[in-house]
Image (cartoon, rainbow over all chains, first blue to last red; front, side, top):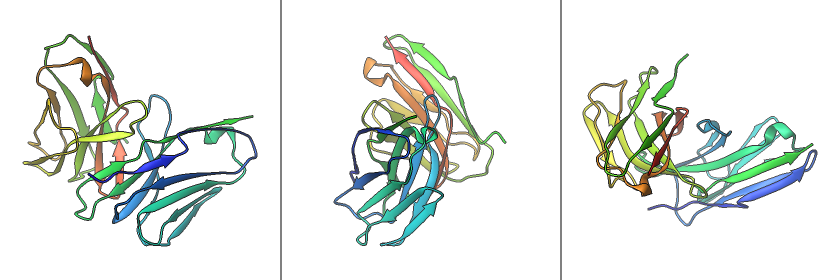
Length: 111
Length: 110
């Protein structure tokens, strides 16, 4: 079983601060995804990274895939209360038939 | 757009009862999957299907059965509910690199 560890588990910050969430594994993934989940809802895909070293930007969110395709990070610039939620990373195995999720980072941004 | 529809949204079962969680998608995706989400453990894959007539086990398949008779539907059956199966269940469809999730079924087994 491929494992993904996310850190930190919980993060509470003030509006306007920057933050980084990490997703690490000892396994190589063919691709890695980041999802955001709000209470009572299913996860919603934010981004997919495929190539080692790839960087993708989505407004104030920057996603990076490690060179060895074992880890990833999510950086949020100038966090806003609307960013509050559970952030999940997920990796696709090399066979392409299974998605493994990390434990999640619960983010709270206070106004 | 309906996307992925799960029913019911909430369910309480007694230990030993059986039930089926329904999942339907209208996006013509070949790949569908079931996850359970428990506090602090992210989502764990129960079963998945790469197309009609084909199913396979995920990380935590014990106590659950699935079938895939059509592209649209992927029901999850609990054979004999146990308190350890209390969880939130999510169905997803899509490509391996882009999963679309339903709103979840919150199941409590007493």
